Length: 138
Image (cartoon, rainbow, N blue to C red; front, side, top):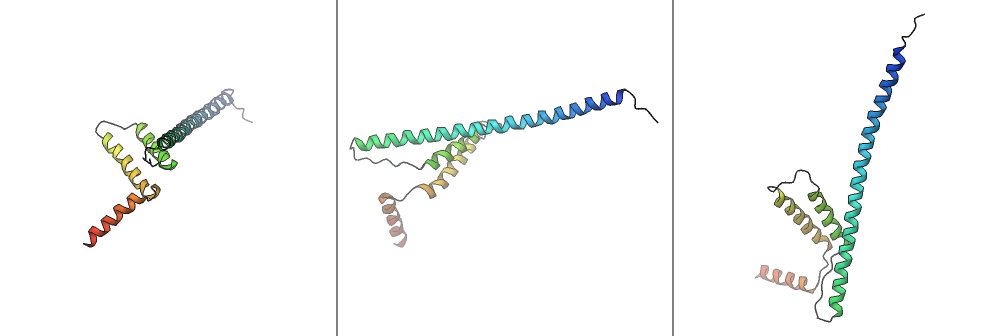
């Protein structure tokens, strides 16, 4: 019967430990990365809610002063989407002065698209729409 050299169990133990260590480092790196992303999303959400609250309070105060001015308050989702898209731009590793205007144009495009679904029609919008349709028929 052949005997196993004394160093084989040592090498296999070291190799196994190294392999497990590498996998643990990789998993730890993934966990930290996802935790950071989750934390940033939570900050963006809290910031959006706080900004929405401040705009709402301001609008209510203006209306209380009976100035006759009405301030439209966008839905909370617009604040959330705006800050989410802004965070993508701010935390992008490839941001340069050359592509900065393009990145902010993307934000504007997203927000303009979102307005189609979130801005409720009001009398001014209806009047403008009537004027446009009358001009088109003439």
